[in-house]
Length: 117
Image (cartoon, rainbow, N blue to C red; front, side, top):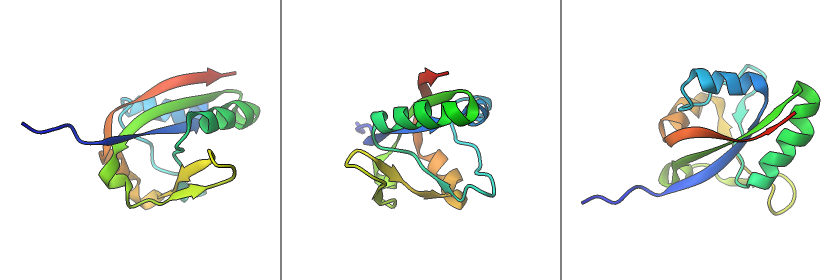
């Protein structure tokens, strides 16, 4: 009998355009980064994702969303946690060229958990 692999829950604040691309990918992957987006930034705390979606995405895109997804914990060890401010402002920095491999380690589906307008 095998035990389920350990996963880490991550959060991603996003705007309407990126969310639509995730929907088109059947909620299983993040879309490729644009040329001006060399890093994919999932965050480690829901509150931080909410703050970005509510305070930044709504202002710039008219709507903000927070998604939640699980990734194989062993795979995530390659990405050091980056502190972008206070003690709960924690991110992983995934280089754009590694996003396909990152997506392959998502366990289950990406879930929409908050919406702000």
